[in-house]
Image (tube, rainbow, N blue to C red; front, side, top):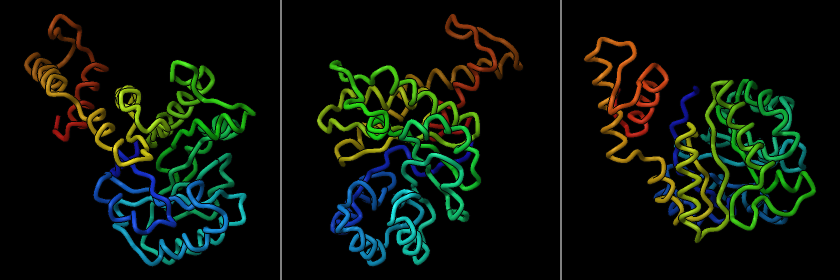
Length: 272
């Protein structure tokens, strides 16, 4: 799996709002300066100038440029080359052709259309790609639909399937997985549930659209004290037995369970 050191809470910030840059950087693990959906067409040029005039830490910043097939793509890329930023988010990625001019950057490819989801494995294999990000709302738009979630607030079946497809493609190609934003800003319980699910499945990060979501995501990705104690106990039991299959707290522990325990410790910032 490609290392992705920016997560777990990535906060979108409109690129034409430089007054928000520093606050976003203070509150999140990394900032996504958004030149795409968050910026009106008439403000695109001003947003590019703002990105140039108000630099952030390049090691904790991603720039979401406009899509490969848009008129703004070339201008965004020309601006980017005048900065120290190296993490780039490419929206609506649909084929490897989209990355022909992004060599030298660490690219987060957004699989957020039907074509992008179907091509996720191919996209993940593209040279500059270090992560795939799933996007639910644009996916539904590309399908001619109107809602990604049902009345219960959960993803509809095809959207959940698409999320799993993108996650599997990323894992198969050894790149990181980033989960979609949770649009209901005040639904912290729903966000916590989805972020915990993402963490359990090996996602590296979840994108946020509001600063209040950051602590919710961080808490969901952070293993509990009980989880860490269990993981440490598993490793100790295996070490005491000299390897192989052991029993711990009434449960069989073999190689996959040992790897689960090691992953928990990594997420907790501890060595195995």
